[in-house]
Length: 331
Image (cartoon, rainbow, N blue to C red; front, side, top):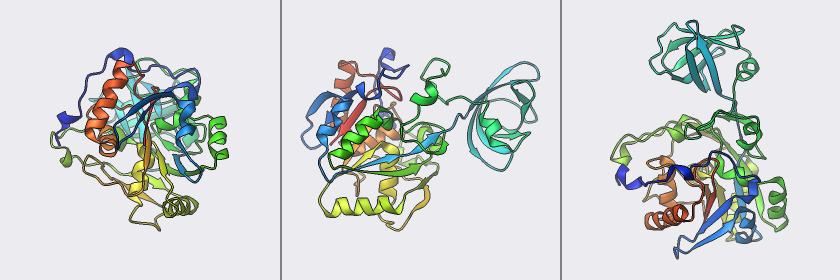
């Protein structure tokens, strides 16, 4: 398939700039991938689609305040997104402006925290104290959210079950859950299991090849507890459904499908139409940007024609799109 096959037009006003007032008050589009039928619900109704014995798998990564705004000695602003730690003092980073020269000094909060540009993708800080470095940061909201991060973003751009720090973007399908809703789901007899995938540049790295099979995914680190593997095995053996919350959870589950003893590692699995899912039976996801690997994965799971129709309806019904937007359950 071609990159242009995954394009669509979206009115700018449908890009959510703020989260819903309550997490579980978001809208929920339910797509049956066998029949193509679509239902429009509220996220709190999601429990109606689960039954006793099913297994809900969530990504418990925690988003780091990885966006730092600094100034050069000349006073010019530098926007830094810390991607991953390379050594005690060095980080791989995305820098804006992109033409910043090696050797440039960047000051954060006066001169107490400083960094030097090593190359266009590397910063070296004057401290090894990671808490001080991230203490100058804010939530790394996506660029299509056209506002500066506010105090509430530190909670709302984080799932209620986040516990393992390491991500630079939120696994946004999980943002709709409340602790109360999770208790309600568990009370129905649905299993809840966790894995960790630290969302990094691989998830939102743009696809530039028109022939999508030429695109190469960067690696992302994951870990999956033995208890989760056992819960998956039990659900499969008893004929119950494994529900992946988000594309990140889906990628980890499909990565370990042929490696049942793998508890941690890296995944560069690229899922696009034609892929046959081995573990995931249902997928909860948000609405994704055009021409992205996320949209390609969801197309692979739902079916291209089904998903096109679902997105048409979502736009017609004025669903809210992207990270702070509404959700889709594919059953």
